[in-house]
Amino acid sequence: MGRWGMGVWRVRKELARHWQYAELPGVDLLRARYVRKEFVRHTHENFAIAAIAAIAAIAAIADGVEVFHHRGVDQYAGAGALALVNPDTPHTGRAGVPEGWRYGAVYPSPEVVAEIAAETTFIRGTAGFVSPVLDDPYAVGLVH
Image (cartoon, rainbow, N blue to C red; front, top):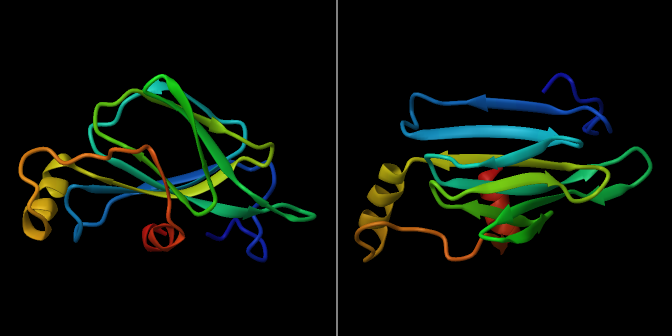
């Protein structure tokens, strides 16, 4: 994180870091900040759980917003919200405000989600998200 000055995101700088930990098999992690980036229609093999964070602009604090086209509708995820996408579900992504959006994401494999669901719930078979956006600042903090 050495590219950040005083905790403030550089206004036009786009950065992304993707990594994995050996201690978390089957889970990919991402930290990103996008302003002009537009993701064309694509899918992920894993679940996508993206936590949208507030971003700091030069003169004021602005909420970042991601817009993603999901199941025929534009979805808006702002600060304090999770953007949730099931595996193999086509979607896009772009900034919803001029300042862009910043987020941390967890991409657990379907196998990891199934194992957790079997251990913690009565769900058997394929688990999945029923809503693509969830306003939950506490969960956003956990993802970050």
